[in-house]
Image (cartoon, rainbow, N blue to C red):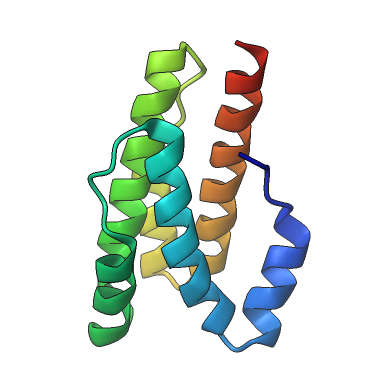
Length: 117
């Protein structure tokens, strides 16, 4: 699994007026499922619910993906952060892009840790 660069991702989310943001919901859900070996999230359903609820579902999505990453960090013995709490709070206040970047960063950290092991 390859790491994702955050800077181009931010620019793409901004310049595509949110279309790449929706793509990232689908992609990040798929990648986290593979990374954690837990296929409990359906990427297509997460994307559909995000669109249908006009973004309200994303608050829950940030929680559940953050929680899945936190659980994986615990299993690997990594320093555990509280992203499952931080990301939804940021999304409520309109900082969904920041939350997305935090999730990508945590995913990159787990990829690094798995390469070391």
